[in-house]
Every structure is written in C-alpha cells, then in structure tokens.
Length: 595
Ligand code: GDP
Ligand code: MG
Image (tube, rainbow, N blue to C red; front, top):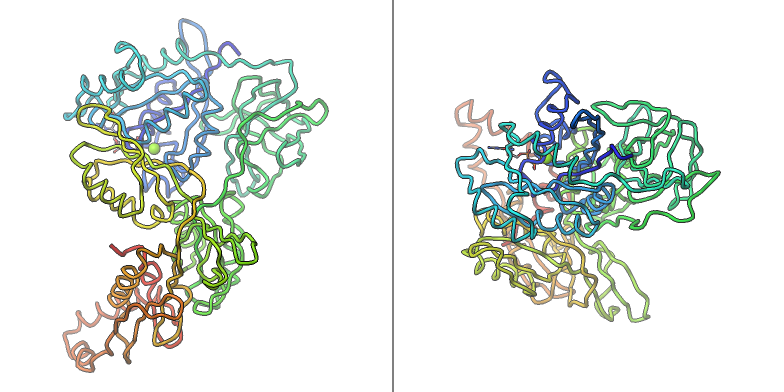
C-alpha cells in the first residue's frame, strides 16, 4: 500500500488533460507508441469528436522511482457540469490531484470549482503550468495567478507541455513525493467505493472501484450497500490499457469488478460495496442519487417507429444510469417518451446516440426543468412538462430550481455579462478580482434560464473569454405561466413552454416570429398564435406557397432542381405532420433560439 498513488487530473476544458494523460501513459510504458492513439482515454467516438471526457475511467501505470516500483492509478474525471457528481466521486477515490492550468488562458471556472472539490476531499494539489510551449504562453503572469489561488510556493509549480512532452518526469516524481500513500486498514472489513461503471454488451456492467479498507478476492460474495443487492465477484482485476484479471485487489488500490450485472441502474456511482460474510458497519460517506435536472419529450419522427424507439431507449438505459424515461403521449406528436437528463449536454448526447447507434430519427421537444406546484387543494406536484401544468386558477404557488453560478471572465466583459445575467433573472451575489484583469462573478439565477441558450450567449458576448460553472441552490417561488402555441387555431402541446410571467408577452411575440421563419410555406396559409390561458398575445402568418415559386423550380436548370429536391428530402427526415401542418424539428426547439 505504501507504493500506491491514486491521483486525478483536474483542469478546465481544453487545458490539456487528455493530452497530458497520454504522455504519462507513454512515459511509464503503459502503452507503446504503436498503441497510442491521440487522446486514448476518450474512447467513445462521441467523446473524441467533441473533445471532452464524458465518462470517467481509471488506468494503472507502474513507475520506477529511485529503484523502487510504484503503482500509479490515474483516475479520469468528466469535464462538464452535467456530470459534477461523478467528478466528486472520482475525486473521493484519490489522494492527490494534478491541477493543470493553460499557460495562455489562466484559471477558468472549472479550474476553480474542481479545485474546491479536491480541497474539500483533502487532496494534495500539484500545480502544473501546462502548454508552456505555446507562443502566447504567459508563464510568469499565470504562475502569479496560481500562487494566489493555491497559496502555494512558486517553486512548487511544474512547467509542462503535454504536447511537447515537457515536465513529464517531474510530474511523475512529484506524484510519488507529494501525494501520500493510501491510508485505509487492510485487515478491516471491506469497503470499496464505486466511482464509475462501464457498460460491456458481452460481459455486463463493469464496476470501477477504489478499495478504502480491507481487500477483495475473486469469488467473494459482496453486497452493494445503497441498493442492498448481492453479487459474486466473478472477475476482479486492475485496469491497464485493458483489464488485467487478478486474484485479489488490495487495500488502497483501484480495480474493476464483473459479476453479471446487466443493468446500469443497479450500479450507483458513490455506492459502497462490502463482504456479505464480514460486512462493514457503514458505507463510505458522500453517496447521493443523481437526479435528472432537465426534461424533454422524445418522439419518433415516423409514428410507426414507436416500438423501435422504446427498444432503443431500453438499450441506452442499460449503459446510461442517469437517463430516466417514461412513456408520454402528446396530442400533436402521438406516442413518445418523457425523458430526464442531467443537463443539456446529456440530452444532446442521448439524442445523438439514438441516431447513431440505433438509427432512429427523433424529435425532441422544448426542455424544461422541474417545477414544484402547490395546488389549491394544498397538494405538492412535481411538474416537468408544460402539459402537466394545472389550470391557473388551481395553482396556489409555483417554485422553480435556482443555481449558484460562477463565471470567470476578463474585466472588459463584466458589463455585458451583468446585463445578460440580469436579463436571465439573475442576482449578482459576489464579485472577486482574481488578478487585475480577471474577475469571478457569482450569481444566483433560475436553472430554467441556463437550460435555454445561456451558455451560448455567454460565450458570444465574452468572445469566448468567460467560463461557467454552477451548482444547485434549491427551490424558490416564481411567477411562472404556461405559454401555449396554436397553429390554425389548434393548440400544439409540444410547442408549449413554461416561462416567467414578466417575459411571457415578449416570448410569445418572439416565439411566433421564430416559428414563422422556421415553418416552411405550405399549400395553405398557417396562422401562428401564442396564448396564455384564453388570451391570445401574439400572432404571425405563414403565407401559402406561391404557384410561381414551384413553377420556377421545375422550369429551372436541372442541377438546381436536383439540389432543391435533395434539400427537401433531407428536410423531410425531421418533419412532423401535426394536424395538416408540417413542422420541422427546429420549430420544436424554437423557444431556445429566441433572443
Ligand atoms: P482536455 O479538454 O483538458 O482533455 O484537453 P485536450 O488534451 O483535449 O487538449 C485540448 C487542446 O489543446 C488540443 O487541441 C490539444 O492538442 C491542445 N494541447 C494539449 N496540450 C497541449 C500543450 O501542452 N501544448 C499545446 N500547444 N497544445 C496542447
Ligand atoms: Mg479531455
């Protein structure tokens, strides 16, 4: 146990975590050059394309330090706010953290939020100034920032470049020298922290764990403390580039467990497992159920594909424990599913996976947070779809979730960011200068506003020089109303949204305008109306298609005609017939595009 080091890398997105991890694996010969693919740890296609680490994994290296062999477990942490609970569990499995800061960008919101998490878990922090090879690197300035932030010595900061392989040995040595060996009692009853799970379609769910106390042998009978479920450890081992089966995983080490578990839901990140014969008296602290934050309807474009979509959702859920869903019907869209996601990124991922892995074409409706409504009978209702909202005269009060948001930016952009946040019903709570040029702003604001286009807007107005992180601050009362949309006099439930009363008129107007842009001309005129209760608050019209437009197309040259037809065919894939009107997918998300 003295020769084990468990560490993670924390950094803001794009500060070079994956690249550095690759270099560590190369340097310790965990992988050969030939095996090395760029960004090895991001092994889902989707992750690689997006350049972000979605699920955390662990990998074991051995490193010879002053003639002695050490085991280093690198625990990868997801890099997005949607997955912050998983980050906290990964951090809880470590004793140390490499804190990477991009030498040209400096500290960002996720640098700080992850750092706080690491400090809360008493991790030893090794500051690394990364990307020193960049022409735009400002090493001295950013070092000042790091010294301020960490209250560390300047000499403790390791200059490095994952790209050029600078500082790699220094980092590995620092891990041995500065990160303490795991504590834990090898003789005590088994306590293993589950910090990740990986789906394997042949072998079932692989549970990734860190042994805090005791040890586990192949064939042991274990019990998961939160779920109460019992299993046999059919296979255990450590994680190299691939799995390395072992007879025993010792106290302090990181490993995997395979025991025929088929469903991701049975394995809860943060849970503890112990022996059935000699159980630990309590679980490792910090377990909590992850809860979906954002809800939306998912419908097949082709109504006949509902059963196929159900099968796809079931399969997806096998390896995505955070995804929840139940059947839902919409008057406009027919049969579909109400789904709960951790956040907007998670929602996009699910939609993309449905399309790529299951070849489904789906329509996603306006995302919503969960509101708490007290009705006039004093019942508490949790509502995550506009269609579930009671009539206004049956509502006593509505509460919505709020967040504490942390934005780090250049001082030049404070003005526009303040305006944006105020426009999003945010309240400035604190403003801290990190350096003369960089400032941290803390806001309290409704989660619903962040769910919509907040992040994109923030990036735009700050020209990319703003980073955001947030956590939940609880529920507060808000004056929300349901905004309905009608097409040719028929309410289209899938286009409804729950919005704040103060914005409802403006939104109604803009939503109608946006829909007019998005709904293509058809053979007849389409009236678009927005209403709150019985009251129409806005109206737009999509004019009927002019005959000569068609005539022109067909009369025109052949290549143009083919292009048009192809475009039409592509568009077709995501059109949904509602009543007699064809509505494109974009229209169901129009509310997100309003500005
Ligand atoms: P992550 O999001 O923290 O995992 O960051 P990545 O490792 O994916 O790197 C983000 C981008 O920065 C990629 O385009 C890398 O090629 C680049 N990058 C990573 N490390 C370095 C470095 O040390 N120097 C330079 N110049 N670029 C780097
Ligand atoms: Mg990465």
